[in-house]
Amino acid sequence: MKIHFWGAAQTVTGSAHYLEVNGKILLLDCGLFQGRRADTYRINSEFRFNPAKVDGVVLSHAHIDHIGNLPNFIKQGYRGRVHTHAATAHLAEVMLADSGRIQEYDAQFVNKRRARRGEPPVEPLYTEEDAVATVPFFEHQALNKPFSPIPGVQVTLVEAGHILGSTALKIEIEEKRKTHTLWFSGDIGRVNLPLIHDPVLPSGDVDTMLMECTYGDRSHESPDVARAELARLLRRTLERDGKVLIPAFAVGRTQELVYAIHRLMDSSDLPNVPVFVDSPLAVSVTDIFKKHPDCFDEEARAMMSDDQHRSALGFDSLTYIRSVEESKALNERTDPMIIIAASGMMENGRILHHLRNNIHDANSTVLIVSWMAPHTLGRRLTDGDPKVNIFGEEFDVAIDVQRVRGYSAHGDREALRDYALAVRSTLQNVYLVHGEQEGADGLTEALTNWGMDAARIHYPARGDTIEL
Ligand SMILES: [Zn+2]
Image 1 (tube, rainbow, N blue to C red):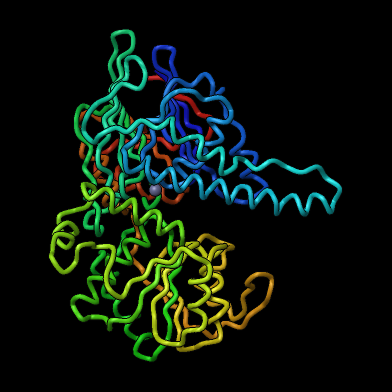
Image 2 (image 1 turned 90 degrees about the vertical axis):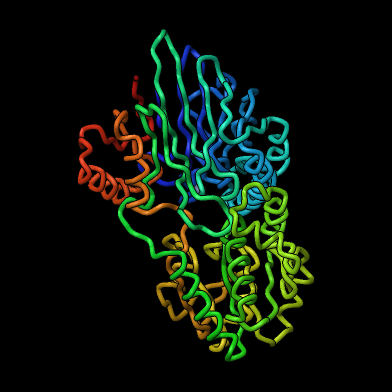
Protein backbone atom coordinates (compact mmCIF):
# COMPACT_ATOMS: atom_id res chain seq x y z
CA MET A 1 0.00 0.00 0.00
CA LYS A 2 1.00 3.60 -0.54
CA ILE A 3 0.29 6.84 1.29
CA HIS A 4 0.42 10.05 -0.71
CA PHE A 5 0.68 13.37 1.12
CA TRP A 6 -1.15 16.00 -0.81
CA GLY A 7 -2.47 18.80 1.40
CA ALA A 8 -1.61 20.15 4.86
CA ALA A 9 1.89 18.82 4.15
CA GLN A 10 4.47 21.19 5.66
CA THR A 11 1.64 23.67 6.15
CA VAL A 12 -1.60 23.84 8.14
CA THR A 13 -4.43 24.14 5.63
CA GLY A 14 -5.78 22.04 2.76
CA SER A 15 -5.80 18.67 4.57
CA ALA A 16 -5.84 15.84 1.98
CA HIS A 17 -3.94 12.54 1.90
CA TYR A 18 -4.75 9.46 -0.10
CA LEU A 19 -4.13 5.76 0.24
CA GLU A 20 -3.66 3.26 -2.54
CA VAL A 21 -4.71 -0.21 -1.41
CA ASN A 22 -5.52 -3.22 -3.61
CA GLY A 23 -5.53 -0.93 -6.64
CA LYS A 24 -8.19 1.34 -5.13
CA ILE A 25 -7.85 4.90 -3.88
CA LEU A 26 -9.19 6.26 -0.59
CA LEU A 27 -8.98 9.99 0.11
CA LEU A 28 -8.66 11.19 3.72
CA ASP A 29 -10.07 14.73 4.02
CA CYS A 30 -10.65 17.10 1.13
CA GLY A 31 -9.72 20.46 2.60
CA LEU A 32 -9.42 23.91 1.19
CA PHE A 33 -5.97 25.43 1.08
CA GLN A 34 -6.06 28.96 2.53
CA GLY A 35 -3.43 31.59 1.88
CA ARG A 36 -2.69 34.35 -0.59
CA ARG A 37 -5.41 34.58 -3.22
CA ALA A 38 -3.05 34.09 -6.19
CA ASP A 39 -1.81 30.71 -4.89
CA THR A 40 -5.04 29.38 -3.44
CA TYR A 41 -6.99 29.25 -6.68
CA ARG A 42 -4.32 27.23 -8.47
CA ILE A 43 -3.61 24.87 -5.56
CA ASN A 44 -7.27 24.18 -4.85
CA SER A 45 -8.31 23.67 -8.47
CA GLU A 46 -5.67 21.02 -9.27
CA PHE A 47 -5.73 17.45 -8.00
CA ARG A 48 -2.79 15.13 -8.50
CA PHE A 49 -5.24 12.28 -9.17
CA ASN A 50 -8.35 12.16 -11.31
CA PRO A 51 -11.31 12.58 -8.92
CA ALA A 52 -13.36 10.24 -11.12
CA LYS A 53 -10.87 7.44 -10.32
CA VAL A 54 -11.05 7.82 -6.54
CA ASP A 55 -13.08 5.08 -4.85
CA GLY A 56 -13.87 6.51 -1.43
CA VAL A 57 -13.58 9.60 0.78
CA VAL A 58 -13.53 9.81 4.58
CA LEU A 59 -13.66 13.20 6.36
CA SER A 60 -12.29 13.76 9.86
CA HIS A 61 -14.26 16.91 10.80
CA ALA A 62 -16.13 19.89 9.40
CA HIS A 63 -13.53 22.66 9.46
CA ILE A 64 -13.22 24.16 5.99
CA ASP A 65 -9.52 23.29 5.75
CA HIS A 66 -10.60 19.61 6.00
CA ILE A 67 -13.76 19.58 3.85
CA GLY A 68 -13.79 22.81 1.85
CA ASN A 69 -12.57 21.45 -1.50
CA LEU A 70 -15.18 18.69 -1.67
CA PRO A 71 -17.62 20.57 -3.98
CA ASN A 72 -14.78 21.11 -6.44
CA PHE A 73 -13.72 17.45 -6.14
CA ILE A 74 -17.23 16.32 -6.99
CA LYS A 75 -17.53 18.93 -9.76
CA GLN A 76 -14.39 17.39 -11.28
CA GLY A 77 -15.92 13.91 -11.41
CA TYR A 78 -15.91 12.09 -8.04
CA ARG A 79 -18.87 9.70 -7.83
CA GLY A 80 -18.22 7.60 -4.70
CA ARG A 81 -19.44 8.01 -1.13
CA VAL A 82 -18.26 10.55 1.44
CA HIS A 83 -18.11 8.81 4.83
CA THR A 84 -18.17 10.85 8.01
CA HIS A 85 -19.85 11.35 11.37
CA ALA A 86 -23.47 12.57 11.09
CA ALA A 87 -22.70 15.85 12.91
CA THR A 88 -19.85 16.52 10.47
CA ALA A 89 -22.16 15.86 7.51
CA HIS A 90 -24.77 18.26 8.92
CA LEU A 91 -22.18 20.95 9.61
CA ALA A 92 -20.61 20.42 6.17
CA GLU A 93 -23.93 21.18 4.52
CA VAL A 94 -24.07 24.75 5.89
CA MET A 95 -20.32 25.37 5.90
CA LEU A 96 -19.88 24.38 2.25
CA ALA A 97 -22.86 26.46 1.11
CA ASP A 98 -21.36 29.44 2.91
CA SER A 99 -17.97 28.69 1.36
CA GLY A 100 -19.60 28.52 -2.10
CA ARG A 101 -21.05 32.00 -1.58
CA ILE A 102 -17.61 33.27 -0.56
CA GLN A 103 -16.02 31.65 -3.66
CA GLU A 104 -18.58 33.36 -5.91
CA TYR A 105 -18.04 36.69 -4.19
CA ASP A 106 -14.24 36.33 -4.47
CA ALA A 107 -14.45 35.55 -8.19
CA GLN A 108 -16.65 38.62 -8.75
CA PHE A 109 -14.09 40.74 -6.90
CA VAL A 110 -11.17 39.36 -8.94
CA ASN A 111 -13.10 39.67 -12.20
CA LYS A 112 -13.79 43.37 -11.67
CA ARG A 113 -10.05 43.92 -11.53
CA ARG A 114 -9.39 41.60 -14.49
CA ALA A 115 -12.01 43.42 -16.58
CA ARG A 116 -10.23 46.72 -15.95
CA ARG A 117 -7.01 45.13 -17.26
CA GLY A 118 -8.81 43.63 -20.27
CA GLU A 119 -8.31 40.04 -18.98
CA PRO A 120 -10.93 37.29 -19.32
CA PRO A 121 -12.99 36.47 -16.20
CA VAL A 122 -12.17 33.51 -13.91
CA GLU A 123 -14.74 30.97 -12.75
CA PRO A 124 -15.31 30.63 -9.00
CA LEU A 125 -13.62 27.50 -7.59
CA TYR A 126 -17.18 26.34 -6.93
CA THR A 127 -20.56 27.89 -6.37
CA GLU A 128 -23.20 27.60 -3.68
CA GLU A 129 -25.08 25.32 -6.09
CA ASP A 130 -22.03 23.03 -6.39
CA ALA A 131 -21.87 22.94 -2.59
CA VAL A 132 -25.53 21.95 -2.30
CA ALA A 133 -24.88 19.16 -4.84
CA THR A 134 -22.44 17.46 -2.42
CA VAL A 135 -25.15 16.65 0.14
CA PRO A 136 -26.43 13.38 -1.45
CA PHE A 137 -22.87 11.96 -1.44
CA PHE A 138 -22.61 11.87 2.36
CA GLU A 139 -22.89 8.60 4.23
CA HIS A 140 -23.23 8.91 8.00
CA GLN A 141 -21.02 6.67 10.12
CA ALA A 142 -21.22 6.08 13.86
CA LEU A 143 -18.33 6.40 16.29
CA ASN A 144 -16.42 3.20 17.14
CA LYS A 145 -18.20 1.11 14.52
CA PRO A 146 -15.93 -0.12 11.67
CA PHE A 147 -17.02 0.32 8.05
CA SER A 148 -15.33 -0.57 4.79
CA PRO A 149 -15.04 2.33 2.30
CA ILE A 150 -12.90 0.31 -0.16
CA PRO A 151 -12.01 -3.41 -0.35
CA GLY A 152 -9.43 -4.50 2.24
CA VAL A 153 -9.84 -1.36 4.36
CA GLN A 154 -11.78 -1.03 7.63
CA VAL A 155 -12.15 2.47 9.07
CA THR A 156 -13.28 3.27 12.62
CA LEU A 157 -14.15 6.83 13.64
CA VAL A 158 -12.82 7.70 17.10
CA GLU A 159 -13.71 10.83 19.13
CA ALA A 160 -11.17 13.63 18.53
CA GLY A 161 -12.54 16.23 20.99
CA HIS A 162 -11.74 19.11 18.64
CA ILE A 163 -15.12 20.40 17.40
CA LEU A 164 -18.61 18.92 17.27
CA GLY A 165 -18.47 15.62 15.34
CA SER A 166 -14.66 15.64 15.04
CA THR A 167 -12.96 12.26 14.73
CA ALA A 168 -9.65 10.52 14.26
CA LEU A 169 -9.59 7.56 11.87
CA LYS A 170 -8.28 4.13 12.76
CA ILE A 171 -7.61 2.46 9.42
CA GLU A 172 -7.01 -1.30 9.30
CA ILE A 173 -5.58 -2.41 5.99
CA GLU A 174 -5.18 -5.82 4.41
CA GLU A 175 -3.32 -6.19 1.13
CA LYS A 176 -1.62 -9.26 -0.30
CA ARG A 177 -1.82 -10.98 3.12
CA LYS A 178 0.03 -8.07 4.75
CA THR A 179 -1.78 -6.07 7.41
CA HIS A 180 -1.21 -2.56 8.68
CA THR A 181 -2.93 -0.32 11.18
CA LEU A 182 -2.73 3.32 10.23
CA TRP A 183 -3.98 6.06 12.54
CA PHE A 184 -4.96 9.42 11.04
CA SER A 185 -5.38 11.91 13.88
CA GLY A 186 -7.37 14.60 12.04
CA ASP A 187 -7.17 17.61 14.38
CA ILE A 188 -6.47 16.59 17.97
CA GLY A 189 -8.67 18.40 20.49
CA ARG A 190 -8.11 19.27 24.14
CA VAL A 191 -9.10 17.71 27.40
CA ASN A 192 -11.76 19.78 29.23
CA LEU A 193 -12.92 21.84 26.28
CA PRO A 194 -16.44 23.00 27.09
CA LEU A 195 -19.47 21.23 25.54
CA ILE A 196 -17.78 18.40 23.63
CA HIS A 197 -16.22 15.12 24.73
CA ASP A 198 -12.52 14.77 25.48
CA PRO A 199 -10.24 13.31 22.79
CA VAL A 200 -9.74 9.55 22.92
CA LEU A 201 -6.13 8.37 22.73
CA PRO A 202 -5.05 5.99 19.95
CA SER A 203 -5.18 2.30 20.73
CA GLY A 204 -4.67 -1.03 18.97
CA ASP A 205 -1.71 -2.27 16.98
CA VAL A 206 -0.98 1.05 15.30
CA ASP A 207 2.22 0.83 13.23
CA THR A 208 1.91 4.05 11.23
CA MET A 209 0.59 7.40 12.38
CA LEU A 210 -0.32 10.50 10.40
CA MET A 211 -0.70 13.18 13.01
CA GLU A 212 -1.19 16.90 13.21
CA CYS A 213 1.48 19.09 14.82
CA THR A 214 -0.11 22.57 14.74
CA TYR A 215 0.98 23.46 18.29
CA GLY A 216 3.86 21.00 18.61
CA ASP A 217 6.08 23.85 19.80
CA ARG A 218 3.98 25.37 22.63
CA SER A 219 2.01 24.75 25.80
CA HIS A 220 -1.49 26.19 26.32
CA GLU A 221 -2.94 27.97 29.34
CA SER A 222 -5.66 25.88 30.96
CA PRO A 223 -9.25 26.55 29.83
CA ASP A 224 -10.05 27.68 33.42
CA VAL A 225 -7.47 30.47 33.21
CA ALA A 226 -8.95 31.56 29.88
CA ARG A 227 -12.46 31.59 31.35
CA ALA A 228 -11.39 33.73 34.34
CA GLU A 229 -9.67 36.18 32.02
CA LEU A 230 -12.74 36.31 29.77
CA ALA A 231 -14.90 37.14 32.80
CA ARG A 232 -12.55 39.86 34.02
CA LEU A 233 -12.34 41.63 30.65
CA LEU A 234 -16.08 41.39 29.98
CA ARG A 235 -16.91 42.81 33.41
CA ARG A 236 -14.48 45.68 33.02
CA THR A 237 -16.08 46.90 29.80
CA LEU A 238 -19.67 46.32 30.87
CA GLU A 239 -19.12 48.19 34.15
CA ARG A 240 -18.06 51.28 32.20
CA ASP A 241 -21.18 50.88 29.99
CA GLY A 242 -19.22 49.86 26.90
CA LYS A 243 -19.97 47.28 24.23
CA VAL A 244 -17.84 44.17 23.86
CA LEU A 245 -17.23 42.99 20.30
CA ILE A 246 -15.91 39.46 19.95
CA PRO A 247 -14.84 38.22 16.51
CA ALA A 248 -15.34 34.45 16.44
CA PHE A 249 -15.47 31.56 14.00
CA ALA A 250 -18.99 30.30 13.42
CA VAL A 251 -18.17 26.72 14.37
CA GLY A 252 -16.85 25.92 17.81
CA ARG A 253 -15.59 29.19 19.23
CA THR A 254 -18.98 30.95 19.01
CA GLN A 255 -20.76 28.13 20.85
CA GLU A 256 -17.93 27.88 23.35
CA LEU A 257 -18.28 31.60 24.16
CA VAL A 258 -22.07 31.42 24.43
CA TYR A 259 -21.75 28.53 26.84
CA ALA A 260 -19.05 30.29 28.90
CA ILE A 261 -21.08 33.53 29.11
CA HIS A 262 -24.21 31.57 30.03
CA ARG A 263 -22.37 29.97 32.95
CA LEU A 264 -20.82 33.28 34.06
CA MET A 265 -24.24 34.95 34.13
CA ASP A 266 -25.76 32.01 36.00
CA SER A 267 -23.13 32.28 38.70
CA SER A 268 -23.54 36.10 38.81
CA ASP A 269 -19.92 36.56 37.74
CA LEU A 270 -21.27 38.74 34.93
CA PRO A 271 -24.08 41.29 34.90
CA ASN A 272 -27.10 40.14 32.95
CA VAL A 273 -26.60 42.32 29.84
CA PRO A 274 -27.95 41.53 26.36
CA VAL A 275 -25.79 39.13 24.34
CA PHE A 276 -26.07 38.87 20.55
CA VAL A 277 -24.72 36.25 18.18
CA ASP A 278 -24.82 38.22 14.95
CA SER A 279 -24.00 35.71 12.21
CA PRO A 280 -26.41 33.72 10.01
CA LEU A 281 -23.86 30.90 9.67
CA ALA A 282 -23.31 30.72 13.44
CA VAL A 283 -27.09 30.53 13.92
CA SER A 284 -27.32 27.56 11.52
CA VAL A 285 -24.34 25.90 13.15
CA THR A 286 -25.80 26.36 16.64
CA ASP A 287 -29.03 24.70 15.47
CA ILE A 288 -26.94 21.72 14.35
CA PHE A 289 -25.22 21.59 17.76
CA LYS A 290 -28.65 21.32 19.37
CA LYS A 291 -29.52 18.36 17.11
CA HIS A 292 -26.55 16.35 18.38
CA PRO A 293 -26.82 16.23 22.19
CA ASP A 294 -24.98 12.87 22.04
CA CYS A 295 -21.85 14.85 21.12
CA PHE A 296 -22.03 16.92 24.33
CA ASP A 297 -20.09 16.13 27.47
CA GLU A 298 -21.74 15.36 30.80
CA GLU A 299 -21.45 18.88 32.19
CA ALA A 300 -23.23 20.38 29.19
CA ARG A 301 -25.89 17.67 29.25
CA ALA A 302 -26.50 18.23 32.96
CA MET A 303 -26.95 21.93 32.32
CA MET A 304 -29.39 21.18 29.51
CA SER A 305 -31.47 18.81 31.60
CA ASP A 306 -31.73 21.39 34.40
CA ASP A 307 -35.32 22.74 34.45
CA GLN A 308 -34.27 26.38 34.29
CA HIS A 309 -31.87 25.97 31.40
CA ARG A 310 -33.27 23.75 28.73
CA SER A 311 -30.42 24.68 26.45
CA ALA A 312 -26.76 25.25 27.19
CA LEU A 313 -26.64 27.39 24.06
CA GLY A 314 -29.62 29.62 24.77
CA PHE A 315 -30.60 31.83 27.72
CA ASP A 316 -32.97 34.72 28.41
CA SER A 317 -30.65 37.59 27.53
CA LEU A 318 -29.22 35.91 24.42
CA THR A 319 -30.48 36.73 20.91
CA TYR A 320 -29.40 34.99 17.73
CA ILE A 321 -29.54 37.33 14.74
CA ARG A 322 -29.97 36.30 11.12
CA SER A 323 -31.49 39.38 9.45
CA VAL A 324 -29.50 42.41 8.30
CA GLU A 325 -32.17 44.76 9.76
CA GLU A 326 -31.80 43.32 13.26
CA SER A 327 -28.03 43.50 12.92
CA LYS A 328 -28.18 47.17 11.90
CA ALA A 329 -30.59 47.96 14.74
CA LEU A 330 -27.76 47.23 17.20
CA ASN A 331 -25.96 50.36 15.94
CA GLU A 332 -28.70 52.58 17.40
CA ARG A 333 -28.34 51.13 20.89
CA THR A 334 -25.98 52.62 23.46
CA ASP A 335 -26.55 50.23 26.38
CA PRO A 336 -23.78 47.83 27.44
CA MET A 337 -23.90 44.56 25.52
CA ILE A 338 -21.84 41.70 24.13
CA ILE A 339 -21.79 41.08 20.36
CA ILE A 340 -20.27 37.88 18.97
CA ALA A 341 -19.89 37.95 15.16
CA ALA A 342 -17.88 36.47 12.30
CA SER A 343 -15.47 36.44 10.66
CA GLY A 344 -13.00 35.15 13.20
CA MET A 345 -10.05 37.10 11.78
CA MET A 346 -12.13 40.19 10.94
CA GLU A 347 -11.51 39.92 7.21
CA ASN A 348 -15.20 40.11 6.30
CA GLY A 349 -18.63 39.66 7.83
CA ARG A 350 -20.74 41.66 10.24
CA ILE A 351 -18.04 42.12 12.86
CA LEU A 352 -16.59 44.81 10.55
CA HIS A 353 -19.77 46.90 10.69
CA HIS A 354 -19.80 46.72 14.48
CA LEU A 355 -16.14 47.66 14.65
CA ARG A 356 -16.64 50.65 12.36
CA ASN A 357 -19.54 51.84 14.50
CA ASN A 358 -17.64 51.57 17.77
CA ILE A 359 -14.03 52.18 16.85
CA HIS A 360 -14.09 55.72 18.31
CA ASP A 361 -15.46 54.58 21.68
CA ALA A 362 -12.71 54.08 24.26
CA ASN A 363 -15.23 52.54 26.69
CA SER A 364 -15.93 49.66 24.31
CA THR A 365 -13.65 46.67 23.72
CA VAL A 366 -12.67 44.33 20.92
CA LEU A 367 -11.95 41.04 22.63
CA ILE A 368 -9.59 38.80 20.67
CA VAL A 369 -10.08 35.13 21.53
CA SER A 370 -8.53 33.41 18.49
CA TRP A 371 -5.27 33.19 16.68
CA MET A 372 -5.06 35.90 14.01
CA ALA A 373 -3.24 35.19 10.75
CA PRO A 374 -0.63 37.69 9.56
CA HIS A 375 -1.97 40.55 7.39
CA THR A 376 -5.55 40.25 8.71
CA LEU A 377 -7.38 43.14 10.38
CA GLY A 378 -7.61 41.06 13.54
CA ARG A 379 -3.80 40.75 13.62
CA ARG A 380 -3.31 44.50 13.04
CA LEU A 381 -5.60 45.31 15.98
CA THR A 382 -3.88 42.70 18.16
CA ASP A 383 -0.51 44.22 17.25
CA GLY A 384 -1.78 47.64 18.43
CA ASP A 385 -1.84 49.49 15.10
CA PRO A 386 -3.13 53.03 15.86
CA LYS A 387 -4.93 53.32 12.49
CA VAL A 388 -6.74 50.61 10.52
CA ASN A 389 -8.61 50.35 7.25
CA ILE A 390 -12.22 49.17 7.23
CA PHE A 391 -14.06 48.96 3.90
CA GLY A 392 -11.31 51.08 2.31
CA GLU A 393 -11.64 53.89 4.85
CA GLU A 394 -9.00 54.76 7.46
CA PHE A 395 -9.97 54.98 11.15
CA ASP A 396 -8.12 55.92 14.35
CA VAL A 397 -8.36 53.08 16.84
CA ALA A 398 -9.76 54.44 20.13
CA ILE A 399 -11.62 51.26 21.10
CA ASP A 400 -9.82 49.14 23.71
CA VAL A 401 -8.28 45.99 22.20
CA GLN A 402 -7.78 43.10 24.64
CA ARG A 403 -6.74 39.55 24.20
CA VAL A 404 -7.70 36.39 26.04
CA ARG A 405 -5.10 33.67 25.63
CA GLY A 406 -5.74 30.01 26.12
CA TYR A 407 -8.66 29.51 23.78
CA SER A 408 -7.63 26.82 21.34
CA ALA A 409 -9.33 23.70 20.05
CA HIS A 410 -5.97 21.99 19.37
CA GLY A 411 -3.89 19.94 21.76
CA ASP A 412 -0.55 21.47 22.77
CA ARG A 413 2.93 19.98 22.69
CA GLU A 414 2.42 17.75 25.75
CA ALA A 415 -0.98 16.53 24.56
CA LEU A 416 0.38 15.70 21.08
CA ARG A 417 3.37 13.89 22.57
CA ASP A 418 1.14 11.77 24.82
CA TYR A 419 -1.11 11.05 21.85
CA ALA A 420 1.69 9.44 19.84
CA LEU A 421 3.20 7.72 22.88
CA ALA A 422 -0.10 6.00 23.66
CA VAL A 423 0.82 3.40 21.01
CA ARG A 424 4.59 3.52 21.35
CA SER A 425 4.94 -0.24 21.77
CA THR A 426 3.78 -0.93 18.21
CA LEU A 427 4.42 2.38 16.47
CA GLN A 428 6.98 2.17 13.67
CA ASN A 429 6.71 5.53 11.95
CA VAL A 430 5.11 8.91 12.62
CA TYR A 431 4.35 11.31 9.77
CA LEU A 432 3.79 14.86 10.97
CA VAL A 433 1.25 16.83 8.94
CA HIS A 434 -0.95 19.90 9.48
CA GLY A 435 1.78 22.09 10.96
CA GLU A 436 4.51 24.59 10.15
CA GLN A 437 8.18 23.73 10.58
CA GLU A 438 8.31 25.05 14.20
CA GLY A 439 5.40 22.82 15.22
CA ALA A 440 7.01 19.78 13.61
CA ASP A 441 10.42 20.54 15.20
CA GLY A 442 8.88 21.09 18.63
CA LEU A 443 6.94 17.84 18.56
CA THR A 444 9.89 15.89 17.14
CA GLU A 445 12.01 17.13 20.04
CA ALA A 446 9.32 16.21 22.58
CA LEU A 447 8.99 12.70 21.13
CA THR A 448 12.72 12.06 20.94
CA ASN A 449 13.10 13.29 24.56
CA TRP A 450 10.70 10.50 25.45
CA GLY A 451 12.75 7.89 23.67
CA MET A 452 11.40 7.80 20.14
CA ASP A 453 13.99 7.35 17.44
CA ALA A 454 14.23 10.59 15.41
CA ALA A 455 14.72 8.51 12.24
CA ARG A 456 11.14 7.27 12.61
CA ILE A 457 9.63 10.76 12.74
CA HIS A 458 9.00 12.32 9.34
CA TYR A 459 7.75 15.65 8.03
CA PRO A 460 6.65 14.88 4.45
CA ALA A 461 6.33 17.51 1.72
CA ARG A 462 3.42 17.97 -0.65
CA GLY A 463 3.54 15.27 -3.31
CA ASP A 464 5.66 12.81 -1.25
CA THR A 465 4.69 9.15 -1.34
CA ILE A 466 5.61 6.32 1.00
CA GLU A 467 5.14 2.62 0.53
CA LEU A 468 4.37 0.30 3.42
ZN1 LIG B 1 -9.95 21.65 12.71
